Amino acid sequence: MSELSELILRRIRDVPDYPRPGVVFKDITPLLADHAAFGAVVDELAGMCEGIDKIVGIEARGFILAAPVAYRAGTGFVPVRKKGKLPAETLERSYDLEYGSAVVEVHRDAFEPGDRVLIVDDVLATGGTARATADLVREAGAEVVGAAVLMELAFLAGRDRLAGLDLRSLVIV
Image 1 (cartoon, helix red, strand yellow):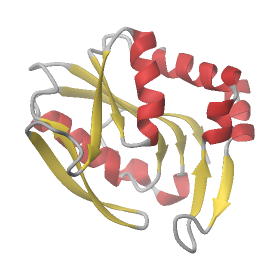
Image 2 (cartoon, helix red, strand yellow; image 1 turned 45 degrees about the vertical axis):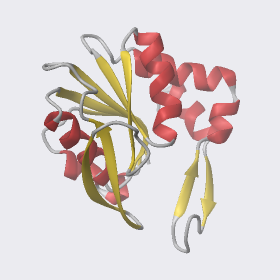
Image 3 (cartoon, helix red, strand yellow; image 1 turned 120 degrees about the horizontal axis):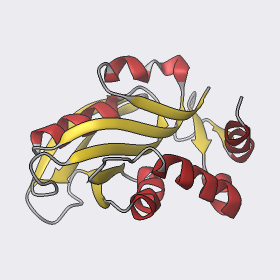
């Protein structure tokens, strides 16, 4: 295991039965509060951005990682939000999560034709949010180059829903 992986794992806490019984929530706030750990994660993710035009961050914790990664990499940042949160014309996709279902949206004009996009999020669980986001980016006329996540929960097999997508995980548990 790499030094960065060990640092990440030491800074993520498990919160049992949140947001509902049986779910173990991966809380990244201790990592975010540690300047060195947060900086190391942003630097590592930004290093994956060669040839990327835009970074997409998925609401809400994905924003926290994706925005500084975009800044560090010198790219644009595009938010993918829950339904009803974006003010202009949107595209939308529904998806299933590990404990329910939801709808995400992106502004219809968020990308230039042919933009090369990296999707950044905190945790890959079942893959539903990432799949819906990739579909939205493609529908908007951009190319999804890949996805990068802080942590992948392998036992939920989210990677399987992202077949054909270059997925990079800083930590796999």
